[in-house]
Length: 265
Image (cartoon, rainbow, N blue to C red):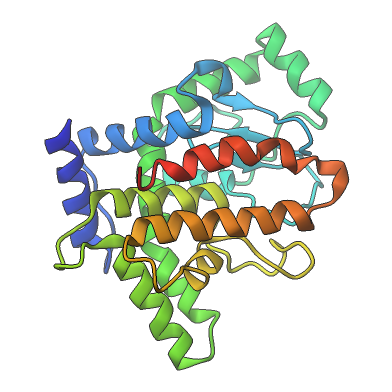
């Protein structure tokens, strides 16, 4: 397993300047790591609708998917996954493509379809179960694109240099060698809370994505992954404080922080 993890990291690090390419074994390893974080590795969470949310979360990355006509401040990621799968020539259910909205227009209709194992639910579940390695490749591609996206939103050259430096510090050890946990932390957090570049993904004007985490890392903390995890906790603390009370985001704090501790402990 240690060798496999090293292979993944080495392949990702070598490709970060271009398109990320993963072998089937590498993609499967990443899929299992992220899926353990998102759904405890349990099939029942592969197609899910969380309490307090107005959208479904599907796949190993719990990619957000909206029903027709629904809008949200959060980035709708599942259509992006489907665009990638279409590009890769992956066969989909006849009713599904990158422009298909979530087939259920309410949480109640979603759970009715899930509990009764409707045709759409069964086909969606089977599709997501069979394409886990492709979903992992999508997440690697998203990480590959995160740094240039973040830098594009910044005007100050010094701030750009700081973000590039901290991204590199998380990804590498002090001696310049690849830090496999650093790659995992960057990939997982980007999938978990986004790049931090969308103005809509803010509460009271303050974001919580990868960009904000890198901005708030403590430069005096010698352990860069601890600095990254601590900054992520601070950003999610701020998110919870700023969030609309009706969302009840406090209930997620403990689980979120357990996840962040896997980045360095």
